[in-house]
Amino acid sequence: MKRRWDQLAIHAILIFILSLTLAPFVFVIDNSMRTNSELNHGFFGLPKFGKQMFSAYANAWEVLRPYTLNTIFVCVVTGIGVVLVGSVSAYVFSRCQFKGRELLLLAVLAFMMIPGVLTLVPSFLWVKKLGLLNSHWVLILPYMAGGQVFAIFLFKSFFDGLPSELFESARMDGAGHFTLYWNMVLPLSKSVIAVVGIVNILGTWNNFLWPFITNSDAKYHVISSGLYLMHQSNVASNFATMFAAYVLASIPLLVLFLYATKPFMQGVTSGAFKA
Amino acid sequence: MSVRRSNFASTTAIYAMLSPTFLLLAVFSLVPFVWAFVTSFFDYEVGGEFRFVGMDNYTEYLHDPTLLPSFGNLLFLTLFGLLVVSTVPLAIAKLIFCLKSERARYLYRVLFLIPIVVPGVAGMMIWQGMIYNDTGLLNETLRLFGREDLTRGWLSDPRTVLWAVVFMGFPFAGGINILIYYAGLAGISESIHEAAELDGARGLIKFLKVDVPLVLSQVKLLTILTVIGTVQGFEGMFILTKGGPGFKTMVPGLWMYMNAFSFQRMGYACAIGVILFLLILGLTVLNMKYFRSTEDLKAEGV
Image 1 (tube, each protein chain N blue to C red):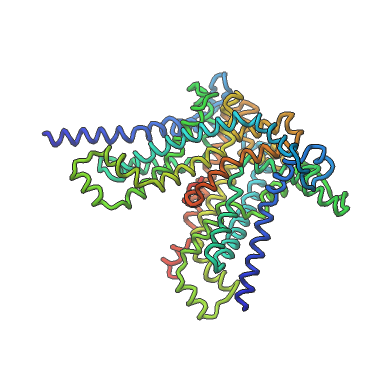
Image 2 (cartoon, helix red, strand yellow):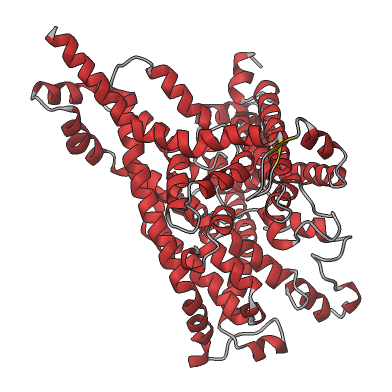
Protein backbone atom coordinates (compact mmCIF):
# COMPACT_ATOMS: atom_id res chain seq x y z
CA MET A 1 0.00 0.00 0.00
CA LYS A 2 2.84 2.36 0.88
CA ARG A 3 4.42 1.71 -2.53
CA ARG A 4 1.22 2.81 -4.23
CA TRP A 5 1.24 6.16 -2.40
CA ASP A 6 4.91 6.63 -3.31
CA GLN A 7 4.07 6.18 -6.97
CA LEU A 8 1.18 8.64 -6.73
CA ALA A 9 3.41 11.19 -5.00
CA ILE A 10 6.02 10.88 -7.78
CA HIS A 11 3.31 11.43 -10.41
CA ALA A 12 2.10 14.50 -8.54
CA ILE A 13 5.59 16.05 -8.34
CA LEU A 14 6.34 15.30 -11.98
CA ILE A 15 3.03 16.69 -13.20
CA PHE A 16 3.56 19.84 -11.13
CA ILE A 17 7.05 20.47 -12.58
CA LEU A 18 5.84 19.59 -16.05
CA SER A 19 3.00 22.11 -15.86
CA LEU A 20 5.43 24.82 -14.71
CA THR A 21 7.69 23.93 -17.63
CA LEU A 22 4.93 24.01 -20.22
CA ALA A 23 2.91 26.89 -18.72
CA PRO A 24 4.64 29.69 -20.68
CA PHE A 25 3.85 27.90 -23.92
CA VAL A 26 0.22 27.40 -22.92
CA PHE A 27 -0.02 31.15 -22.15
CA VAL A 28 1.55 31.90 -25.54
CA ILE A 29 -1.04 29.80 -27.37
CA ASP A 30 -3.83 31.30 -25.27
CA ASN A 31 -2.70 34.89 -25.85
CA SER A 32 -2.08 34.34 -29.56
CA MET A 33 -5.79 33.69 -29.97
CA ARG A 34 -6.95 36.79 -28.10
CA THR A 35 -7.25 40.17 -29.77
CA ASN A 36 -5.01 43.02 -28.70
CA SER A 37 -7.86 44.86 -27.00
CA GLU A 38 -8.60 41.71 -24.98
CA LEU A 39 -4.89 41.49 -24.10
CA ASN A 40 -4.87 45.11 -22.97
CA HIS A 41 -7.74 44.41 -20.61
CA GLY A 42 -5.81 41.79 -18.73
CA PHE A 43 -3.13 39.18 -19.00
CA PHE A 44 -5.28 36.32 -17.76
CA GLY A 45 -8.26 35.20 -19.77
CA LEU A 46 -9.44 32.83 -22.40
CA PRO A 47 -9.97 33.74 -26.06
CA LYS A 48 -13.51 34.50 -27.20
CA PHE A 49 -14.63 31.84 -29.60
CA GLY A 50 -14.86 33.02 -33.19
CA LYS A 51 -13.04 33.75 -36.42
CA GLN A 52 -10.88 36.52 -34.90
CA MET A 53 -9.06 33.81 -32.93
CA PHE A 54 -6.89 33.12 -35.93
CA SER A 55 -6.42 36.62 -37.33
CA ALA A 56 -3.09 36.98 -35.50
CA TYR A 57 -1.93 33.77 -37.16
CA ALA A 58 -2.83 35.12 -40.60
CA ASN A 59 -0.82 38.28 -39.90
CA ALA A 60 2.15 36.39 -38.50
CA TRP A 61 2.20 33.85 -41.31
CA GLU A 62 2.35 36.63 -43.89
CA VAL A 63 5.65 37.79 -42.36
CA LEU A 64 7.04 34.36 -41.49
CA ARG A 65 6.21 32.45 -44.67
CA PRO A 66 9.34 33.34 -46.69
CA TYR A 67 11.53 32.86 -43.58
CA THR A 68 10.04 29.42 -42.98
CA LEU A 69 10.60 28.37 -46.58
CA ASN A 70 14.21 29.61 -46.42
CA THR A 71 14.84 27.71 -43.19
CA ILE A 72 13.35 24.51 -44.57
CA PHE A 73 15.44 24.85 -47.74
CA VAL A 74 18.66 25.42 -45.78
CA CYS A 75 17.82 22.57 -43.38
CA VAL A 76 17.13 20.09 -46.17
CA VAL A 77 20.20 20.92 -48.27
CA THR A 78 22.48 20.98 -45.20
CA GLY A 79 21.00 17.74 -43.90
CA ILE A 80 21.45 15.88 -47.19
CA GLY A 81 24.94 17.29 -47.60
CA VAL A 82 26.02 16.32 -44.09
CA VAL A 83 24.61 12.80 -44.42
CA LEU A 84 26.33 12.23 -47.79
CA VAL A 85 29.72 13.77 -47.00
CA GLY A 86 29.76 12.41 -43.46
CA SER A 87 28.79 8.86 -44.37
CA VAL A 88 31.26 8.62 -47.28
CA SER A 89 34.16 9.78 -45.10
CA ALA A 90 33.04 7.55 -42.23
CA TYR A 91 32.86 4.61 -44.62
CA VAL A 92 36.41 5.27 -45.79
CA PHE A 93 37.71 5.66 -42.22
CA SER A 94 35.87 2.53 -41.11
CA ARG A 95 36.48 0.14 -44.01
CA CYS A 96 39.65 1.20 -45.84
CA GLN A 97 43.26 0.88 -44.80
CA PHE A 98 45.49 3.68 -46.04
CA LYS A 99 48.44 5.79 -45.09
CA GLY A 100 47.66 8.58 -42.66
CA ARG A 101 44.30 7.14 -41.57
CA GLU A 102 44.84 7.66 -37.83
CA LEU A 103 46.31 11.09 -38.32
CA LEU A 104 43.46 12.31 -40.52
CA LEU A 105 40.87 10.94 -38.10
CA LEU A 106 42.59 12.77 -35.27
CA ALA A 107 42.59 15.95 -37.37
CA VAL A 108 38.82 15.67 -37.82
CA LEU A 109 38.41 15.18 -34.07
CA ALA A 110 40.56 18.24 -33.38
CA PHE A 111 38.09 20.43 -35.26
CA MET A 112 35.43 19.60 -32.68
CA MET A 113 37.54 21.44 -30.11
CA ILE A 114 37.35 24.82 -31.86
CA PRO A 115 34.70 26.93 -30.10
CA GLY A 116 32.30 29.00 -32.14
CA VAL A 117 33.04 32.15 -30.16
CA LEU A 118 36.64 32.12 -31.46
CA THR A 119 35.71 31.80 -35.12
CA LEU A 120 32.54 33.93 -35.28
CA VAL A 121 34.26 37.19 -36.22
CA PRO A 122 37.01 35.78 -38.51
CA SER A 123 34.43 33.53 -40.21
CA PHE A 124 32.36 36.58 -40.97
CA LEU A 125 35.37 38.45 -42.38
CA TRP A 126 36.28 35.39 -44.44
CA VAL A 127 32.86 34.70 -46.00
CA LYS A 128 32.59 38.41 -46.74
CA LYS A 129 35.87 38.18 -48.62
CA LEU A 130 34.59 35.09 -50.45
CA GLY A 131 31.55 37.12 -51.54
CA LEU A 132 29.12 34.72 -49.88
CA LEU A 133 27.20 37.28 -47.79
CA ASN A 134 23.46 37.37 -48.50
CA SER A 135 23.01 33.94 -49.99
CA HIS A 136 21.83 30.53 -48.84
CA TRP A 137 25.38 29.20 -49.29
CA VAL A 138 26.78 31.32 -46.48
CA LEU A 139 24.65 29.19 -44.17
CA ILE A 140 24.74 25.82 -45.92
CA LEU A 141 28.50 25.46 -46.45
CA PRO A 142 29.69 26.39 -42.92
CA TYR A 143 26.86 24.30 -41.40
CA MET A 144 28.00 21.35 -43.50
CA ALA A 145 31.63 21.87 -42.47
CA GLY A 146 30.69 21.90 -38.78
CA GLY A 147 27.90 19.31 -38.89
CA GLN A 148 29.83 16.63 -40.75
CA VAL A 149 32.40 16.20 -37.96
CA PHE A 150 29.88 14.83 -35.54
CA ALA A 151 28.19 12.85 -38.33
CA ILE A 152 31.50 11.17 -39.22
CA PHE A 153 31.93 9.91 -35.67
CA LEU A 154 28.37 8.68 -35.37
CA PHE A 155 28.47 6.95 -38.76
CA LYS A 156 31.93 5.51 -38.15
CA SER A 157 31.02 3.88 -34.86
CA PHE A 158 27.93 2.41 -36.53
CA PHE A 159 29.89 1.12 -39.55
CA ASP A 160 32.56 -0.32 -37.24
CA GLY A 161 29.83 -2.39 -35.62
CA LEU A 162 28.60 -3.95 -38.87
CA PRO A 163 29.75 -7.59 -39.18
CA SER A 164 32.83 -7.84 -41.41
CA GLU A 165 31.55 -11.13 -42.97
CA LEU A 166 28.89 -9.00 -44.63
CA PHE A 167 31.55 -6.97 -46.38
CA GLU A 168 33.73 -9.95 -47.22
CA SER A 169 30.96 -11.96 -48.86
CA ALA A 170 29.86 -8.92 -50.87
CA ARG A 171 33.47 -8.37 -51.94
CA MET A 172 33.66 -12.02 -53.03
CA ASP A 173 30.67 -11.38 -55.25
CA GLY A 174 32.72 -8.69 -56.90
CA ALA A 175 31.12 -5.60 -55.38
CA GLY A 176 33.23 -2.44 -55.43
CA HIS A 177 33.33 0.19 -52.71
CA PHE A 178 30.64 2.27 -54.33
CA THR A 179 28.24 -0.69 -54.57
CA LEU A 180 29.01 -1.65 -50.99
CA TYR A 181 28.38 1.87 -49.75
CA TRP A 182 25.29 2.64 -51.80
CA ASN A 183 23.51 -0.73 -51.93
CA MET A 184 24.47 -2.25 -48.60
CA VAL A 185 25.75 0.24 -46.03
CA LEU A 186 23.31 3.11 -46.62
CA PRO A 187 20.14 0.96 -46.51
CA LEU A 188 21.40 -0.60 -43.26
CA SER A 189 22.04 2.83 -41.73
CA LYS A 190 18.53 4.28 -41.83
CA SER A 191 18.37 4.76 -38.05
CA VAL A 192 21.73 6.57 -37.87
CA ILE A 193 20.80 8.70 -40.87
CA ALA A 194 17.62 9.72 -39.04
CA VAL A 195 19.61 10.70 -35.95
CA VAL A 196 22.21 12.67 -37.91
CA GLY A 197 19.45 14.35 -39.91
CA ILE A 198 17.46 15.39 -36.86
CA VAL A 199 20.53 16.64 -34.99
CA ASN A 200 21.39 18.83 -37.96
CA ILE A 201 17.88 20.11 -38.44
CA LEU A 202 17.71 21.09 -34.76
CA GLY A 203 21.05 22.89 -34.97
CA THR A 204 20.19 24.70 -38.18
CA TRP A 205 16.70 25.63 -37.00
CA ASN A 206 17.99 27.17 -33.77
CA ASN A 207 21.03 28.98 -35.10
CA PHE A 208 20.46 32.69 -34.75
CA LEU A 209 23.65 34.75 -34.69
CA TRP A 210 25.29 33.45 -37.87
CA PRO A 211 22.27 34.00 -40.16
CA PHE A 212 21.65 37.31 -38.41
CA ILE A 213 25.10 38.74 -39.18
CA THR A 214 25.67 37.17 -42.61
CA ASN A 215 22.28 37.69 -44.27
CA SER A 216 21.08 41.25 -43.86
CA ASP A 217 18.98 41.01 -47.03
CA ALA A 218 15.40 40.19 -46.01
CA LYS A 219 15.21 37.74 -48.91
CA TYR A 220 17.49 35.31 -47.04
CA HIS A 221 16.24 35.60 -43.46
CA VAL A 222 15.61 32.36 -41.62
CA ILE A 223 13.10 31.78 -38.81
CA SER A 224 15.40 32.77 -35.94
CA SER A 225 16.77 35.96 -37.46
CA GLY A 226 13.36 36.76 -38.92
CA LEU A 227 11.64 36.43 -35.54
CA TYR A 228 14.22 38.70 -33.94
CA LEU A 229 13.84 41.36 -36.63
CA MET A 230 10.05 41.07 -36.38
CA HIS A 231 10.46 41.66 -32.65
CA GLN A 232 12.53 44.79 -33.38
CA SER A 233 10.04 46.14 -35.95
CA ASN A 234 6.69 47.84 -35.38
CA VAL A 235 4.96 44.44 -35.48
CA ALA A 236 6.27 43.96 -31.93
CA SER A 237 3.62 46.27 -30.47
CA ASN A 238 1.07 43.79 -31.76
CA PHE A 239 1.41 41.20 -29.00
CA ALA A 240 -1.04 38.67 -30.40
CA THR A 241 0.81 38.58 -33.73
CA MET A 242 4.16 38.03 -32.02
CA PHE A 243 2.73 35.21 -29.92
CA ALA A 244 1.22 33.63 -33.02
CA ALA A 245 4.62 33.90 -34.71
CA TYR A 246 6.29 31.99 -31.85
CA VAL A 247 3.70 29.24 -32.19
CA LEU A 248 4.09 29.07 -35.97
CA ALA A 249 7.89 28.95 -35.67
CA SER A 250 7.60 25.91 -33.39
CA ILE A 251 5.14 23.89 -35.48
CA PRO A 252 7.58 22.39 -38.04
CA LEU A 253 9.82 20.93 -35.32
CA LEU A 254 6.78 19.79 -33.35
CA VAL A 255 5.56 17.89 -36.42
CA LEU A 256 9.01 16.36 -36.85
CA PHE A 257 9.03 15.48 -33.16
CA LEU A 258 5.64 13.77 -33.31
CA TYR A 259 6.51 12.00 -36.53
CA ALA A 260 9.92 10.75 -35.37
CA THR A 261 9.88 10.67 -31.57
CA LYS A 262 12.28 7.72 -31.30
CA PRO A 263 15.13 9.01 -33.53
CA PHE A 264 14.50 12.48 -32.09
CA MET A 265 15.13 11.22 -28.57
CA GLN A 266 18.16 9.24 -29.71
CA GLY A 267 19.41 12.28 -31.57
CA VAL A 268 19.33 14.68 -28.67
CA THR A 269 21.05 12.22 -26.34
CA SER A 270 23.65 11.03 -28.83
CA GLY A 271 26.05 13.70 -27.65
CA ALA A 272 25.33 16.00 -30.54
CA PHE A 273 24.87 18.95 -28.29
CA LYS A 274 28.46 18.90 -27.16
CA ALA A 275 29.53 22.38 -28.15
CA MET B 1 53.53 -4.06 -60.86
CA SER B 2 49.87 -4.32 -61.62
CA VAL B 3 49.09 -4.88 -57.93
CA ARG B 4 51.02 -1.78 -56.95
CA ARG B 5 49.26 0.24 -59.58
CA SER B 6 45.83 -0.85 -58.36
CA ASN B 7 46.88 -0.02 -54.81
CA PHE B 8 47.97 3.39 -55.90
CA ALA B 9 44.71 3.94 -57.73
CA SER B 10 42.65 2.98 -54.74
CA THR B 11 44.69 5.25 -52.47
CA THR B 12 43.92 8.11 -54.84
CA ALA B 13 40.27 7.11 -54.75
CA ILE B 14 40.36 7.08 -50.96
CA TYR B 15 41.77 10.59 -50.77
CA ALA B 16 39.24 11.69 -53.38
CA MET B 17 36.39 10.35 -51.27
CA LEU B 18 37.73 12.16 -48.21
CA SER B 19 38.29 15.40 -50.09
CA PRO B 20 34.83 16.97 -49.54
CA THR B 21 35.27 16.59 -45.79
CA PHE B 22 38.72 18.11 -45.68
CA LEU B 23 37.93 20.80 -48.23
CA LEU B 24 34.98 21.97 -46.13
CA LEU B 25 37.02 21.79 -42.92
CA ALA B 26 39.96 23.65 -44.44
CA VAL B 27 37.88 26.47 -45.92
CA PHE B 28 35.25 26.98 -43.23
CA SER B 29 37.00 25.87 -40.04
CA LEU B 30 40.77 26.02 -40.42
CA VAL B 31 40.98 29.38 -42.18
CA PRO B 32 38.76 31.19 -39.62
CA PHE B 33 40.71 29.51 -36.81
CA VAL B 34 44.05 30.83 -38.11
CA TRP B 35 42.53 34.19 -39.01
CA ALA B 36 41.30 34.66 -35.48
CA PHE B 37 44.86 34.60 -34.12
CA VAL B 38 46.36 36.63 -36.97
CA THR B 39 43.67 39.33 -36.88
CA SER B 40 44.04 39.70 -33.11
CA PHE B 41 47.47 41.30 -33.69
CA PHE B 42 46.07 43.90 -36.08
CA ASP B 43 43.94 46.96 -36.02
CA TYR B 44 41.33 46.38 -38.69
CA GLU B 45 37.92 47.57 -39.73
CA VAL B 46 35.96 46.28 -42.70
CA GLY B 47 37.03 48.15 -45.83
CA GLY B 48 40.08 49.61 -44.07
CA GLU B 49 43.74 48.65 -43.90
CA PHE B 50 45.33 46.01 -41.69
CA ARG B 51 47.66 47.81 -39.28
CA PHE B 52 49.97 45.64 -37.18
CA VAL B 53 49.73 46.53 -33.49
CA GLY B 54 51.42 43.54 -31.83
CA MET B 55 49.98 42.75 -28.41
CA ASP B 56 48.16 46.10 -28.11
CA ASN B 57 44.68 44.58 -28.43
CA TYR B 58 45.43 42.20 -25.58
CA THR B 59 46.94 44.81 -23.25
CA GLU B 60 44.04 47.15 -24.00
CA TYR B 61 41.56 44.45 -23.02
CA LEU B 62 43.28 44.10 -19.64
CA HIS B 63 42.25 47.70 -18.95
CA ASP B 64 38.83 47.46 -20.56
CA PRO B 65 36.02 48.89 -18.37
CA THR B 66 33.88 45.82 -19.10
CA LEU B 67 36.58 43.35 -18.08
CA LEU B 68 35.72 43.05 -14.38
CA PRO B 69 31.91 43.24 -14.60
CA SER B 70 31.76 40.89 -17.58
CA PHE B 71 33.97 38.21 -16.06
CA GLY B 72 32.14 38.62 -12.74
CA ASN B 73 28.85 38.04 -14.55
CA LEU B 74 30.35 35.08 -16.38
CA LEU B 75 31.42 33.52 -13.09
CA PHE B 76 27.95 34.04 -11.64
CA LEU B 77 26.23 32.62 -14.73
CA THR B 78 28.57 29.61 -14.78
CA LEU B 79 28.12 28.79 -11.10
CA PHE B 80 24.36 29.18 -11.35
CA GLY B 81 24.31 27.03 -14.50
CA LEU B 82 26.39 24.32 -12.83
CA LEU B 83 24.17 24.31 -9.75
CA VAL B 84 21.05 23.96 -11.88
CA VAL B 85 22.36 21.36 -14.32
CA SER B 86 23.66 19.06 -11.61
CA THR B 87 20.46 19.06 -9.53
CA VAL B 88 17.09 19.64 -11.19
CA PRO B 89 17.34 17.35 -14.24
CA LEU B 90 19.02 14.62 -12.19
CA ALA B 91 16.26 14.69 -9.58
CA ILE B 92 13.56 14.57 -12.25
CA ALA B 93 15.32 11.75 -14.09
CA LYS B 94 15.48 9.78 -10.84
CA LEU B 95 11.79 10.42 -10.15
CA ILE B 96 10.84 9.24 -13.63
CA PHE B 97 13.10 6.22 -13.23
CA CYS B 98 11.34 5.29 -9.97
CA LEU B 99 8.01 4.90 -11.74
CA LYS B 100 6.82 1.34 -12.13
CA SER B 101 4.92 1.72 -15.38
CA GLU B 102 7.13 1.53 -18.44
CA ARG B 103 4.64 3.59 -20.46
CA ALA B 104 4.52 6.38 -17.88
CA ARG B 105 8.33 6.57 -17.83
CA TYR B 106 8.40 6.91 -21.61
CA LEU B 107 5.57 9.45 -21.66
CA TYR B 108 7.26 11.76 -19.12
CA ARG B 109 10.53 11.64 -21.01
CA VAL B 110 8.71 12.64 -24.21
CA LEU B 111 6.70 15.40 -22.51
CA PHE B 112 9.74 16.98 -20.83
CA LEU B 113 11.45 17.07 -24.23
CA ILE B 114 8.70 19.09 -25.92
CA PRO B 115 10.13 22.58 -25.14
CA ILE B 116 13.04 21.74 -27.44
CA VAL B 117 10.81 22.30 -30.50
CA VAL B 118 10.54 26.02 -29.66
CA PRO B 119 13.38 27.91 -31.39
CA GLY B 120 15.82 29.28 -28.82
CA VAL B 121 15.27 32.87 -29.92
CA ALA B 122 11.51 32.48 -29.58
CA GLY B 123 11.91 30.96 -26.11
CA MET B 124 13.87 33.97 -24.90
CA MET B 125 11.48 36.47 -26.43
CA ILE B 126 8.56 34.60 -24.88
CA TRP B 127 10.12 35.07 -21.43
CA GLN B 128 10.86 38.70 -22.19
CA GLY B 129 7.46 39.54 -23.65
CA MET B 130 5.24 37.40 -21.51
CA ILE B 131 6.83 36.98 -18.14
CA TYR B 132 9.16 39.94 -17.51
CA ASN B 133 7.19 42.50 -19.51
CA ASP B 134 5.47 45.47 -17.79
CA THR B 135 2.14 43.74 -18.30
CA GLY B 136 3.63 40.26 -18.16
CA LEU B 137 2.91 37.29 -15.95
CA LEU B 138 5.09 38.38 -13.01
CA ASN B 139 3.78 41.93 -12.73
CA GLU B 140 0.16 40.94 -13.43
CA THR B 141 0.32 38.26 -10.74
CA LEU B 142 1.71 40.80 -8.27
CA ARG B 143 -1.10 43.23 -9.20
CA LEU B 144 -3.63 40.44 -8.75
CA PHE B 145 -2.42 40.17 -5.17
CA GLY B 146 -2.44 43.94 -4.75
CA ARG B 147 1.33 44.32 -4.59
CA GLU B 148 1.69 47.04 -7.23
CA ASP B 149 4.68 48.29 -5.21
CA LEU B 150 6.71 45.20 -6.10
CA THR B 151 6.14 45.39 -9.86
CA ARG B 152 9.06 46.53 -11.96
CA GLY B 153 10.73 46.14 -15.33
CA TRP B 154 12.49 42.95 -14.40
CA LEU B 155 15.00 43.21 -17.24
CA SER B 156 15.69 46.94 -16.84
CA ASP B 157 15.98 47.20 -13.06
CA PRO B 158 19.70 46.82 -12.25
CA ARG B 159 18.84 45.01 -9.02
CA THR B 160 16.86 42.24 -10.70
CA VAL B 161 18.22 41.98 -14.22
CA LEU B 162 20.87 39.33 -13.63
CA TRP B 163 18.46 37.14 -11.66
CA ALA B 164 15.81 37.63 -14.32
CA VAL B 165 18.29 36.42 -16.92
CA VAL B 166 19.34 33.28 -15.03
CA PHE B 167 15.80 32.39 -14.06
CA MET B 168 14.78 32.34 -17.68
CA GLY B 169 13.74 28.77 -18.35
CA PHE B 170 12.60 28.08 -14.78
CA PRO B 171 12.09 25.34 -13.55
CA PHE B 172 14.98 24.25 -15.82
CA ALA B 173 13.34 20.91 -16.50
CA GLY B 174 12.70 20.99 -20.24
CA GLY B 175 15.21 19.62 -22.69
CA ILE B 176 17.81 16.95 -23.13
CA ASN B 177 19.55 16.83 -19.74
CA ILE B 178 16.87 14.62 -18.19
CA LEU B 179 17.41 12.09 -20.97
CA ILE B 180 21.18 12.12 -20.44
CA TYR B 181 20.80 11.43 -16.71
CA TYR B 182 18.06 8.90 -17.36
CA ALA B 183 20.38 6.92 -19.64
CA GLY B 184 22.99 6.97 -16.87
CA LEU B 185 20.53 5.77 -14.23
CA ALA B 186 19.26 3.05 -16.56
CA GLY B 187 22.84 1.82 -16.90
CA ILE B 188 23.14 1.04 -13.18
CA SER B 189 22.71 -2.67 -12.70
CA GLU B 190 19.90 -4.10 -10.61
CA SER B 191 22.32 -6.04 -8.39
CA ILE B 192 23.84 -2.81 -7.07
CA HIS B 193 20.39 -1.59 -6.00
CA GLU B 194 19.63 -4.91 -4.33
CA ALA B 195 22.95 -4.93 -2.49
CA ALA B 196 22.32 -1.38 -1.28
CA GLU B 197 18.84 -2.27 -0.03
CA LEU B 198 20.25 -5.27 1.82
CA ASP B 199 22.71 -2.91 3.49
CA GLY B 200 19.72 -0.90 4.64
CA ALA B 201 20.17 2.09 2.30
CA ARG B 202 16.82 3.77 1.59
CA GLY B 203 15.35 6.82 -0.08
CA LEU B 204 17.49 9.93 -0.27
CA ILE B 205 20.54 8.35 1.40
CA LYS B 206 20.49 5.58 -1.18
CA PHE B 207 20.11 8.10 -4.00
CA LEU B 208 23.09 10.16 -2.79
CA LYS B 209 25.34 7.21 -1.93
CA VAL B 210 24.46 4.81 -4.73
CA ASP B 211 22.95 6.64 -7.72
CA VAL B 212 24.89 9.89 -7.70
CA PRO B 213 28.40 8.37 -7.77
CA LEU B 214 27.27 6.12 -10.61
CA VAL B 215 26.05 8.98 -12.80
CA LEU B 216 29.15 11.14 -12.24
CA SER B 217 30.11 10.52 -15.89
CA GLN B 218 26.92 12.25 -16.95
CA VAL B 219 27.47 15.03 -14.41
CA LYS B 220 30.98 15.47 -15.78
CA LEU B 221 29.73 15.64 -19.37
CA LEU B 222 27.05 18.19 -18.52
CA THR B 223 29.51 20.19 -16.41
CA ILE B 224 31.88 20.52 -19.34
CA LEU B 225 29.05 21.38 -21.72
CA THR B 226 27.64 23.98 -19.31
CA VAL B 227 31.00 25.68 -18.78
CA ILE B 228 31.81 25.74 -22.50
CA GLY B 229 28.28 26.87 -23.34
CA THR B 230 28.25 29.67 -20.77
CA VAL B 231 31.69 31.05 -21.63
CA GLN B 232 30.70 31.14 -25.31
CA GLY B 233 27.10 32.10 -24.95
CA PHE B 234 25.83 35.62 -25.30
CA GLU B 235 22.74 35.22 -27.48
CA GLY B 236 20.53 35.57 -24.42
CA MET B 237 22.10 38.86 -23.35
CA PHE B 238 22.11 40.08 -26.94
CA ILE B 239 18.38 39.51 -27.30
CA LEU B 240 17.23 40.44 -23.81
CA THR B 241 19.44 43.19 -22.41
CA LYS B 242 22.29 44.11 -24.79
CA GLY B 243 24.46 43.82 -21.68
CA GLY B 244 22.66 46.54 -19.79
CA PRO B 245 21.59 48.39 -17.83
CA GLY B 246 25.15 49.73 -17.71
CA PHE B 247 27.35 46.67 -17.82
CA LYS B 248 25.07 44.85 -15.38
CA THR B 249 24.63 41.86 -17.70
CA MET B 250 27.65 42.34 -19.96
CA VAL B 251 29.54 39.14 -20.79
CA PRO B 252 32.87 38.89 -22.67
CA GLY B 253 31.26 37.21 -25.70
CA LEU B 254 28.76 40.03 -26.12
CA TRP B 255 31.50 42.65 -25.78
CA MET B 256 33.41 40.80 -28.51
CA TYR B 257 30.32 40.87 -30.72
CA MET B 258 29.73 44.57 -30.10
CA ASN B 259 33.33 45.46 -30.86
CA ALA B 260 33.16 43.58 -34.13
CA PHE B 261 29.74 44.52 -35.42
CA SER B 262 28.89 47.78 -33.69
CA PHE B 263 32.30 49.47 -33.31
CA GLN B 264 34.00 47.82 -36.32
CA ARG B 265 37.01 46.84 -34.19
CA MET B 266 37.70 43.45 -35.73
CA GLY B 267 41.21 42.97 -34.33
CA TYR B 268 40.12 43.82 -30.80
CA ALA B 269 37.14 41.46 -31.12
CA CYS B 270 39.41 38.65 -32.30
CA ALA B 271 41.71 39.20 -29.32
CA ILE B 272 38.73 38.77 -26.96
CA GLY B 273 37.78 35.64 -28.91
CA VAL B 274 41.29 34.22 -28.47
CA ILE B 275 41.20 34.89 -24.73
CA LEU B 276 37.84 33.11 -24.44
CA PHE B 277 39.21 30.20 -26.48
CA LEU B 278 42.17 29.84 -24.11
CA LEU B 279 39.82 30.06 -21.13
CA ILE B 280 37.59 27.30 -22.54
CA LEU B 281 40.62 25.16 -23.36
CA GLY B 282 42.04 25.58 -19.86
CA LEU B 283 38.74 24.84 -18.11
CA THR B 284 38.12 21.78 -20.27
CA VAL B 285 41.58 20.38 -19.49
CA LEU B 286 41.09 21.06 -15.77
CA ASN B 287 37.72 19.37 -15.82
CA MET B 288 39.08 16.33 -17.69
CA LYS B 289 41.96 16.05 -15.29
CA TYR B 290 40.47 16.69 -11.89
CA PHE B 291 36.77 15.89 -12.13
CA ARG B 292 36.61 12.22 -11.28
CA SER B 293 34.00 10.32 -13.27
CA THR B 294 32.44 6.99 -12.37
CA GLU B 295 35.09 5.13 -14.36
CA ASP B 296 37.89 6.91 -12.50
CA LEU B 297 36.33 6.07 -9.13
CA LYS B 298 36.12 2.42 -10.16
CA ALA B 299 39.73 2.43 -11.33
CA GLU B 300 40.80 3.84 -7.96
CA GLY B 301 38.85 1.12 -6.23
CA VAL B 302 36.67 3.48 -4.19
